[in-house]
Image 1 (cartoon, rainbow, N blue to C red):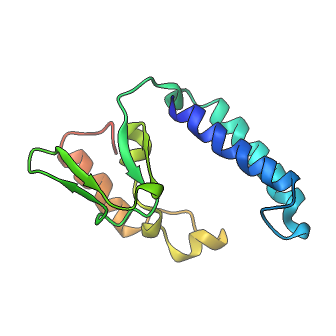
Image 2 (cartoon, rainbow, N blue to C red):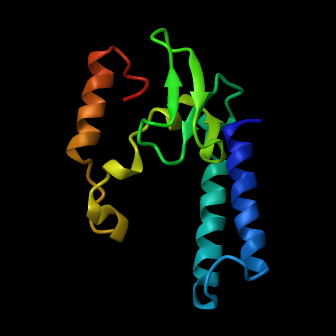
Length: 132
């Protein structure tokens, strides 16, 4: 399964829940439904998400304390599996949502935070512009 297929499946599940009135308050259904259709369209058009691999483990609550690994990078354990999934490197190595400006979540600031800039600098310093 590609990342695109995984995301389309997740979006379609949310769309079905909306139609069954199982997800949010009625006054928000139309807005969320239209937003999910837009997101679905963007995912469908994203070439990077069609990659057949390699895949990496990503955790939705990305704090860094949920994966155990050896020094060589071999994963020995994942805590809280229900939040873990596999995806392509572009999604895996992006900055955690917790690093975004607080105003980002209220649509007031989409500039990079100092933590996100540090991560970009670290990827570039490690000669990994493909992750930056």
